[in-house]
Length: 155
Image 1 (tube, rainbow, N blue to C red):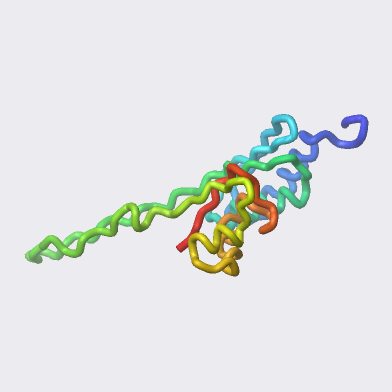
Image 2 (cartoon, rainbow, N blue to C red; image 1 turned 135 degrees about the vertical axis):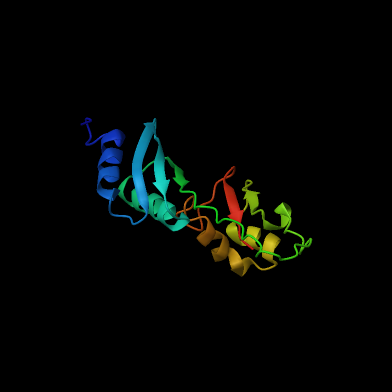
């Protein structure tokens, strides 16, 4: 215990202990403290579980920066259907291009706001909550974005 209460290491360890098992779909949560920055690690079944872990941790521990490196569990890839016996296989429809399905990412620059980013990608600033909701694992407040953050821009 530090001179003025618990150290950041102790607070992070207590928060991790209290969050383990309390968030559905979260496995093996851990925290690494480097200075005033905490990096969360572990595995989550969904982006919602990953974001909730980050949000709940930030409610329990005040850090200068919390980095969410909780990995998403990979869902099993379904097997391609096999054609029925005697079926004629043709070229079929073209596959969707990787570029069309690849998520857009915006790197926050000085002076950016979620409203300005939403206007750039959607044509209206009022769509900023769509970006905030898609990035709850990184953002805790729609008014607090920082240069260098990489934000997913949902379709």
